[in-house]
Length: 294
Image 1: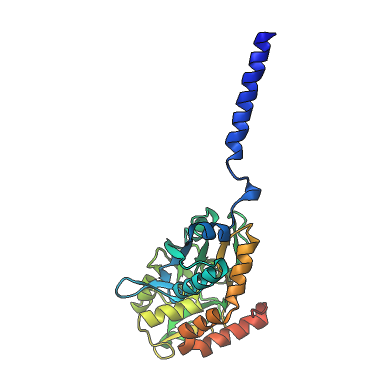
Image 2 (image 1 turned 45 degrees about the vertical axis):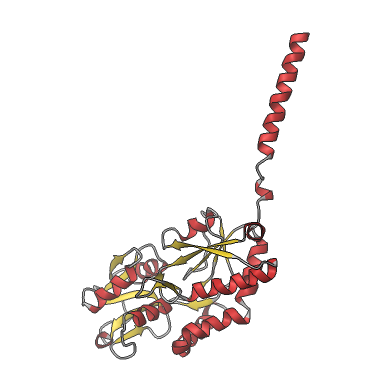
């Protein structure tokens, strides 16, 4: 009997230690929210692209620039106010076409800002904010080829540059199966694609119109004169959203409220003022086609 009682006591101690060990880790339902963690640490972790003018890019001095960097500054000010903190530090992670969803899904960053098309991605633990921009796929071509490259036709044997693993590539493959798609990838993929267009190595480069405009400005192309975006209305329409961790409605609501605020809206005018008329035309078309954004 004494031996049995000792075994029971030992077993009880082991069970208690087991329970104590696992109770020290938060369950999924008790996972810390983004706002709670920022309040505790004073640190906001963000992912920003370096290859997506005007959202995020490196200038001639190698400094990070772009609309997203300015948006994060507005977000920091709002967090200071919301959490009653004097200082919120920001840690920037480089996001790319290939790691942007993992950065958020793995909770490495709290938010990723870039040209991210809102869509269902069940393989990742993410959600998208409300849309902040409407755009769509267009082709950048040389003006003197406007009569030979007709987006309403089959584009048979036309060499079209695309970024690998993008919705633009998928659309081109589906809509123009007789075209020759030339893949570019990496942080400099869009830059090298447009360089290939300038060197007559490809006939067109397909991407979201806003990104083509941004890259054309950086590369000092004369849009409307030497180069054109066709068709005038995009082939498809896409909504851009910020990437956020899922299962965090508080953080989602906070970011969505910020997108609609005046300081964030003014950033759009600051960055797109010179081409606001063209962009508004595209957005009006896409609102009518796919639904509205406020």
